[in-house]
Length: 162
Image (cartoon, rainbow, N blue to C red; front, side, top):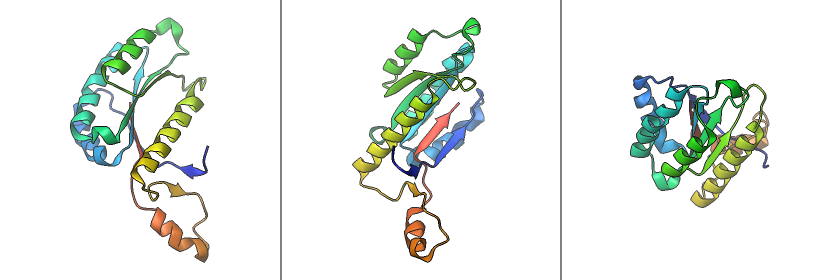
């Protein structure tokens, strides 16, 4: 992986309709949207369509990639959403990537973030825009201050909707 950081926004929606304006303001600046649902909560899975429609109506579709994440795979006995349903949703909404994860056991978390980082890198190359990723070099040296000022334009490359 390359030595850069990705600036992103994380929005916990919890089925709340008032998040719509917040999501809309992020749409023009995000290259990747990650839609996360709780596999133990059918309502969170059903809410994906609502969130996707907001983003799809306001984002530049050809400039964005969409990921679907089914979280809490560690809670097998409480499962309410089957893997095939997640795969079907990915296909229905024309999403790039689907993965099942566990934040508790960290199953597949590294794979998810590697895929996000690689997608952002490819999007950046397509756009020819090198200022969107923040360089990790220290800002306190005079030699780097001009570069860091140039590379610190506010922009979000990844937006996660939970």
